[in-house]
Length: 112
Image (cartoon, rainbow, N blue to C red):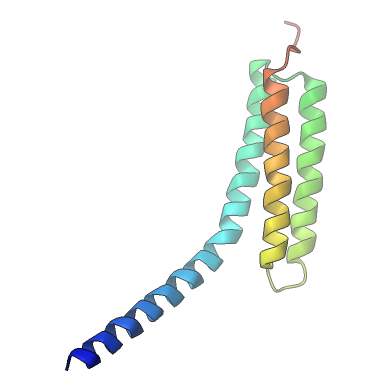
């Protein structure tokens, strides 16, 4: 009886783990999209508030657009994003996020 309970617990843990992996796989593309939107919003807000010059904002927007096009290209094969593609996208999004942060905090501001 005790061995049967142990076996059932292990089976339930495996099923729960598989379900979690499936949910995470479905959520990953949404995370990419949400982050992409947040970064666009950060750029726009920086230009509006004056912490980014129009030139800085335009340059960052172009970099974001290039990244967006790369994401669309990776998705175009119909299989969604592979784990390797998601990792590369995350790294590029991290780099862009760091650039946004640095540009918003440098000494350059819009002239009023």
